[in-house]
Length: 305
Image (cartoon, rainbow, N blue to C red; front, top):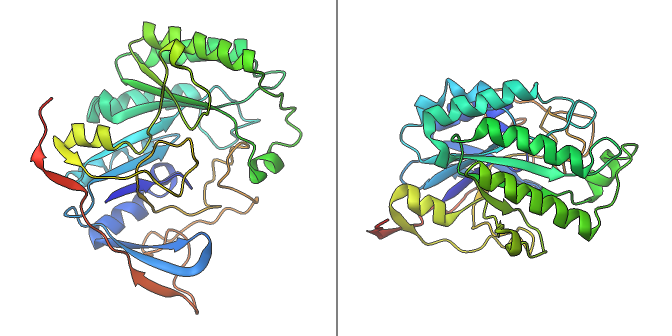
């Protein structure tokens, strides 16, 4: 099985000690976001965990723990945008984050460290021209440290719409999308990066841009040298190319506080005790804990590349 850690919160930035404690214990508990008292017990045995996909905006707090993951295959979806504190109040200085990205690639290699410039939004400050200039700067600093970049345009979910009030968001016209896609493609190509879009309905193939698979069975198969028998994740959006995975995060637990984030609905930030099997909180009255069926998706035959 593939673990997503996590679309719902930044585990590497804020919960690395908790996660490594769970690795040592061999299991964790995760709540169903649609049914709070429905709890799954997730095995973390290397025998059934084929890959861990980490999502982060700053890997530094996890760097010292990577050696503890020697029995696991993993890669990072690492987001670095051009926004300042008005949009991303809890994210560290971007030059520091970029340096940490490079440090991570020095340890795990560029194939396992994916650069995300995501999501792209427009205001009077954050214009198309601003994003192109910023993307060029970041891509030049990350050349050789990653092989793939993923971007997307902001989706206004209910939580996002509430959290972005007062920012003066401007709608994306089709012309603006195409202009930005063309410019990003030129920059990515110059810096030797494959460029992909995340869950976008438009076709950008004219700019040599392909749809992303952030939880990517093909990449995992390449890294493992074995076939992966995985189906599309039915819990994601229609345009999402991700394969099936188990997300071990929890909503409303990320202190980054990014205004565009769909995973935080309130100002309340829940933190965890590193000894708890739950990322946030403890077992409560009414909880029903069931063992989640876990099995490897790896096929027997080795692949030739």
